[in-house]
Image 1 (cartoon, one colour):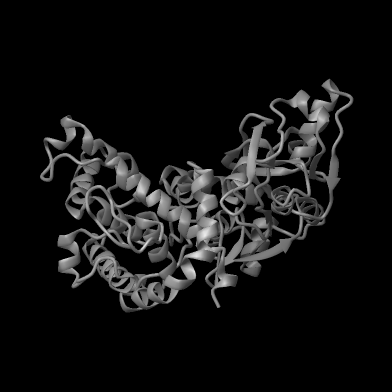
Image 2 (spheres, one colour; image 1 turned 180 degrees about the vertical axis):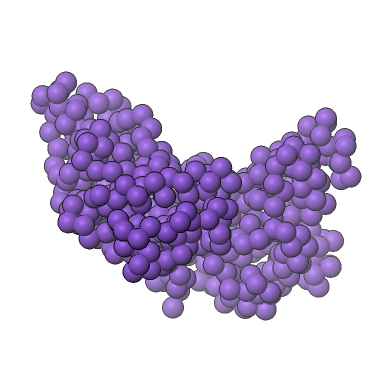
Length: 452
């Protein structure tokens, strides 16, 4: 089965749906095609480029790989420690593009050639949850504020200083925003400024972080193009337009960000604790069951946490029981005699999850197969089939989870469910169910060091 090797990265071969124009023989684009390499300057961070399960992934990574494949070259990633180092390297012509979550600001726009906008983020003031926090820009006068040197954050603070001359801050050179967020989480810094997408990802790992307020409206993120690379800019714009029109850009954003939007501080903080207190005992059971049924064990463990919080004797009001919260009927079908026995429950749940995967239509590809199967585990495969039919009626691709998330809740509306075979369903529940599992799974993936 192709999902045996579970890979998070989002790869679409030839996704742009258009071909490269007549290859140029000169200019920056011509040089890239001649050397068959696109040099990409980036940061090693969870929003850009990082290693997960022996694979390089990240929003910027995946987007750059897609563009390189369109050009017919390979993407060569050069990693720097800070935005200022990347900008300096671009000034020196060391990269073809800089793909590092760069905000297109007025100041930068006067100096650099930017590609198309691909995402938007707000600058946010972030402090520790247990501390007193500012509520508006003028409150910053009473706080110790830290930001990355020569960043878009510092550019924004320079603007505010024109209105508040007493505003001060500390500029940190040669470090990342993620580094400063960790410092805030450890109470080593009082408050910092960070982009909302970076906060969105990192608050799962540092649940004590609190967004005090937004410092800006949404600002566009875009790549910086090598000096003199107008030909590269034109080709990038041509490719990007089709990539966006085809829905691949929104699918990429859905993959990396959408499941993180609803943050539950208490739930995430408790999960972090239980990774070290409850999971070690259950770890071999998850690993054995996952291996037998060709599943990623951390995904299985994340599902189990959503089901029972890893409580062996968990019982719901509807009388489902155990680690995997199996019904009597499902337990019997999966050969589980004692639902509160963790070994039997986990093995039975893994078997049922695997069967759901087998029943997901082959047109559903990649990691979306997991989300469809998990939704079916929660609400039943019949309702998933109904939702696919409804998606088609509504002109949406029934093979993409980002569309199913919008369609499934409609199964609770009479004008829709009365026309479908399996009728009414609380379709919002599987959407939340999958969202939470994805969040727990992402956190588990960051805890590799404790699973030896």
